[in-house]
Picture 1 (cartoon, helix red, strand yellow):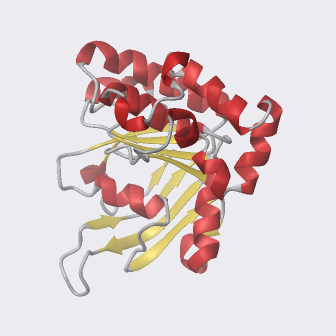
Picture 2 (picture 1 turned 180 degrees about the horizontal axis):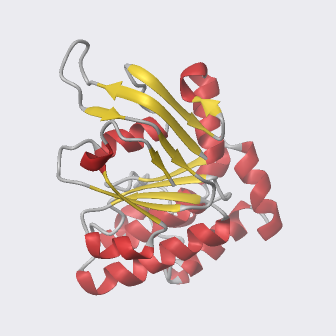
Length: 229
């Protein structure tokens, strides 16, 4: 699923390295828990995995495709087809309804739209994921900005799962939830990813969640080390 050759990343040309990694491999369908102190490069690594960032040296490949070999619109299309992202700030479109936010990936990816046909189409698939996330049907037609923070987090999870992308990247997916809800939500996310057949890479400061994942990594310990799951 994921193959990283030794890489270096710096935010400014000639500046200090933000991230230095050795070889790293993740198999299809695995769940990966990634943790480390603030500023160690966790969100940067997610950006590299999603092809939003490019390493200064080295290589990042998803499904055998080197992100660096894709240019412009081809990179955007590949990302839309194969990557679902749960952003730390959710990045929902506030003026769209809950359902319209969840179906958004299908507007940009023909592949994910086609995968939803087995569920009756994008809208039916969106409704199914929202039910799985425990969001009441009465909220589905509301604007996203009318929801609580915790409800928005569930919408963001449903959107990331739409069309069963091969890779789901989750940046602090329980940050907006109180301790009583974190475990139940993480259980939902893990099971949903497994049901979708998706690889899940989750960044979190809540190390109590780590035991529920197939693979557990501390980013500082991964520097210049070959990691094979």
